[in-house]
Image (cartoon, rainbow, N blue to C red; front, side):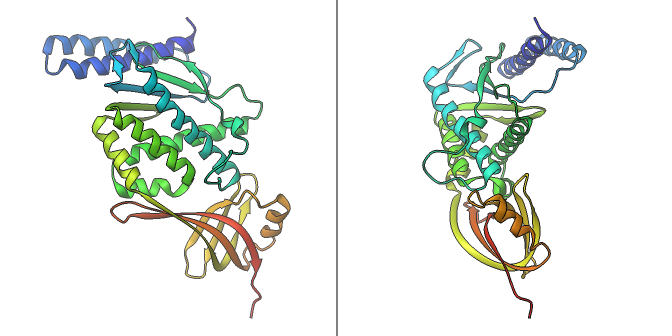
Length: 306
């Protein structure tokens, strides 16, 4: 068994020990044996040689759709994976190109394709990884997207304030896919553990229900607005921009997908100069009134100095 395969197996065994400890309740004899076995597995994990970092996300489920460590309801798995994969794909394109249209095909979606690369043993779940990529930038971007989505899912199970803050970088279309994903998991009375690199998002049944309810109750409002202020520049490689409005607010976001490289370079000629920006504004508002805005720069014009 290779080091990578052994590591995946042992990590699955740790998850299985956690599940059995939860089921054992207060049984002192069973609990002692399980904790001892878990310590042995964790010690072996520490002694394995370091793995070459690779992008992957693991989703583990428990609850009604799962039969112990034997298997998972295939219909549930299909329903849950579809919106999750679409959420990753849509958020990836939004971060690469700016705004994603509410409907229709998604540009360059093949770049965010994930493969089913493992079925972790010792627990029930899926390991998803991008295919071998010639463009390492795409792979790094997928890793960033997965990390960001994990953070947002975790925040959804906590409180409105943290969730609203996490939504600042979320594409509205990807947010809808997140709603769909959480609803499938909640409606099937399942728990979710999502692992991206060293980040673990744990949503038990109660937190899944809270996360789904919070996401469903959050509204989105989209409109185009004009703001005057000082343009602080754009990074063409990442597509990010900064703009300080006359009121003092710093607006940070993405350059719109339909802005050409030539137009973006022209925008940068206005760095640190009075400008008027045309922006696409998306406002996320939770049921308690917490709100955050996401900005997309569509056009920029110089403002004559009086």
